[in-house]
Image 1 (cartoon, rainbow, N blue to C red):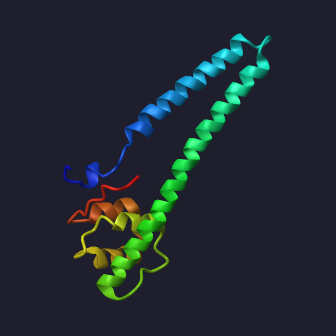
Image 2: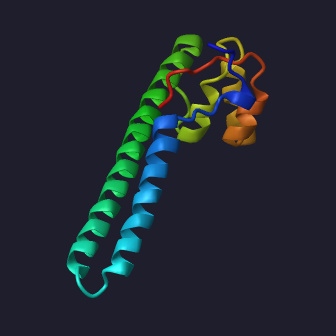
Image 3: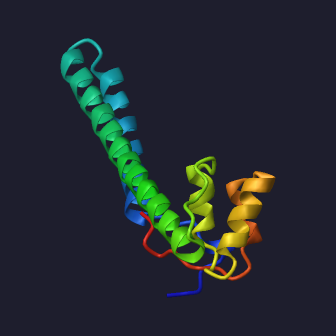
Length: 142
């Protein structure tokens, strides 16, 4: 696996971000075209197809958001435990989940100092990631 850093840490899942999105878009266009062509004769069937498609798109999006939410909670707990292991203290609850998620990329050596800096300067997640000197890769993000 190639080395992860700030420039290449974002993860794109080709099956979700490219294939599923493209299929949903094409199907949406086709279902709208079907409605327009059959506005008089098969309007009910056309609307059923459109509503089913919209339902499937929403289900796919919501399921992805649920998985990301659970993963964010797990990362917060992991980083809280790591901070406890390194310092004997729990993370300050004023740190946002997004800040904690960004802090996960910091090595153990720089993690406690970066946590303190993040709290005192209220660094954004992007600023935290840019401040990481020794990048700790996360290849398991959904």
